[in-house]
Length: 249
Image (cartoon, rainbow, N blue to C red; front, side, top):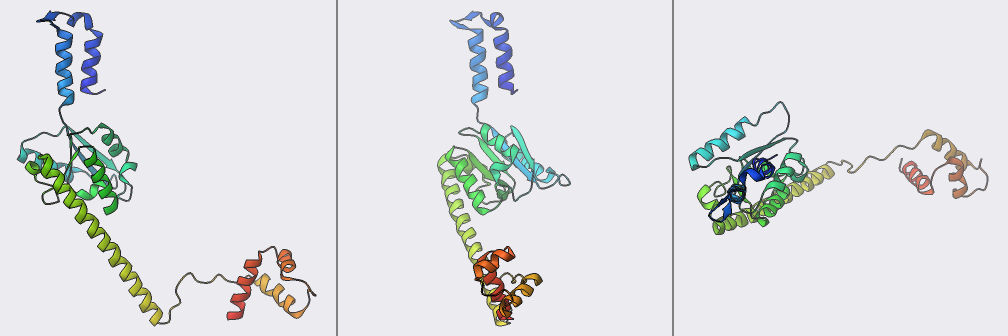
């Protein structure tokens, strides 16, 4: 139960005790307005991720705490997941639960921007989704995204996020193209060296070779390929594949 829910529960349980008028407003109403005010204040969340229980979030947490002290604010909630970095952001249980709590005007702080996703595309999707909900994202390892004053200016933070997303997408596309080029170059070198590419051909079963030789020598008589494959318990396509392999030898 959250602080707000706890206070509200006890107020409602003791409603008669608080139902005293003061300048036209009951103490119940005064207190509930105060609690609502606390609840509606924007919150600052931090998210950390490690891959195994053998690792610790200490470094990430300390970096964020030092940043908060330097900029004069307190962290409302620390959230972390112990899960592989290859897991999509929304498939991380604690991150997923945190996102459901985030409201317009809240701030999410990460020590490293890549903690938000499994790859560049996932990070971009998450940042755009958070931005669309009015959530400020502060990443301590990214210039301008780590500027507390600028990221608390709505117009500036939106512009910074837009520029970052554009650059991140461009860099991700360049990386994909580089990987593709390296793969193609490797294939060309392999071909030049006479290496056969692709999956190696599967071997032909000895039993098929034996029966196929009988077919070729006429021991099966005048039967069709369809009849032969039925006897062997294989498909017609498999028959021709095996024959093709044998003919290439």
